[in-house]
Length: 126
Image (cartoon, rainbow, N blue to C red):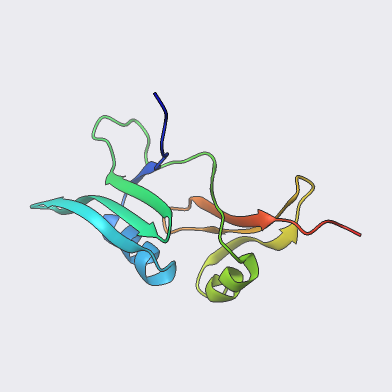
């Protein structure tokens, strides 16, 4: 038995705003969605090989708002190109920089206030 893929599924308090942010701001496309009389309650979004799912908040949740304690880390082909594409359209968490762990990355906040980081292997320091 082999695990093939991990696709995060996060809760959202505003599915329409989440779909709008990911499609219009980040360039994702809708792979699939489910809706009822209240509107969309689940969706799967993708851009190239990256996929993420969102769902309405669990009715049994004791949290006051959708939460995620961590960072979703994406590996684009070119961090600087993506930075130029996004930097004026998003809430920046940190600008592109080399980190001691060998990565060059930047991070933003999505409409749910989740941190999304975009990185690539840093060029060796000379």
